[in-house]
Length: 483
Ligand SMILES: Cc1cc2nc3c(=O)[nH]c(=O)nc-3n(C[C@H](O)[C@H](O)[C@H](O)COP(=O)(O)OP(=O)(O)OC[C@H]3O[C@@H](n4cnc5c(N)ncnc54)[C@H](O)[C@@H]3O)c2cc1C
Image 1 (tube, rainbow, N blue to C red):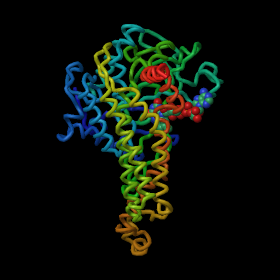
Image 2: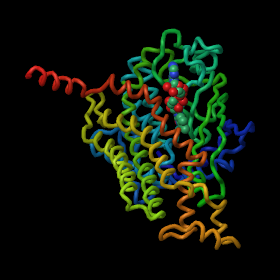
Image 3: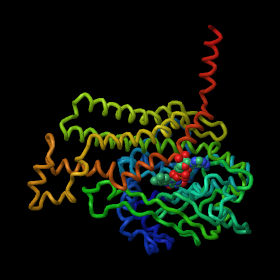
């Protein structure tokens, strides 16, 4: 049983995994310069679990898991459990300014949700139910970090998986034997995959049709599994530029494509296979949305709060913070921020125990509103950064060290603001640029727009499943009947 430290996490990554960057295989991901800062940020998250100020929130004694585990692994039984989960998510999110969306708490609570619904998997076969329970316990006991990969490559959207020009591209099963299943093909986008311990694979969206059975598999394997290759996108990390690129130099999460070349998945790691009926039910019936969206909404709240503070400081630096039109812009930002902040709190208030497994689930629709509005709100915040920063966002020195060079005086005179020195204002504007103008910033906007899945599908799903629909329709009907 372990609550890992950062050093233990890093040591676990030296395992011979196959990770590729710019056409070259990385010998040791812990020594790879492009990952250095992100790994240090993640290691700090693990270290926080041992910090006396946070350890009682970040970890918990779980008799049903055999001892002390990180908070996301706990099966929530009470509202207080949900509140403590929210607090744990907030502590980690604040340590990364909300910039690491795929920190270990996210996939780990996803796995907890799957294990909480062991009955769903057992319905398929008792061994599958046991496999998900055992895997959750194993990941919790070893305090592991998972990535998850849900999507197929963006092929021809008009065709089903088996109808693609090369049906072998989307990840599929090619063999079953006494040891397990053999899978082959490609999945994306696996954020953090180069430096997670394991990968959890399940297909999304759950709209499988007859003929696609070979593609309907849910399983997990370690990242150093034979035949598993991780291919990185270009890094956006700016090394050695701590104050010049304060976010991208710390929190760039690598996104990756994962290629499975005849990978053997042992039976104890197979949770569902070749069953489109079960797969199509998985997303909803596992109730993973309730437990994961609590984490994602808290993380978004922290990020929006951080950006809001930057907006206020930008307005102050220009001396316009009290102007009525600027107050209106900032007031709107507060309203958006509060609406996201309240999704997780409202979801706890309306949480209900599932009699099927005794777990308490935060209210889905309170959380779904955060997932639906996040993709709209975050780009609005980015737009506000650009409006308040204006041309000042581009009129910056290469490095803040230039203030100590012979041209420092010129820079100070040209960049000073209202009650703020040129040096301090430049540091603030460099932060704002990292959020709204850098490659890192662009990736974050794309992330917020996409991480909960395609928004149109999400909204249609909310309308389809809306649990209070009948309540409001009955209300209308009563009113109409009384006219
Ligand atoms: C930075 C980042 C990190 C991510 N990290 C992860 C991760 O860790 N794990 C993970 O599993 N996923 C991750 N994702 C993937 C994310 O879940 C998807 O990007 C999201 O679900 C949208 O899917 P897509 O990218 O395939 O876009 P698409 O679904 O291809 O959407 C692109 C456009 O095509 C349209 N479209 C889609 N299907 C059809 C159709 N059948 N007919 C007509 N039009 C269609 C959409 O409406 C949209 O306009 C990440 C994404 C980003 C951007």
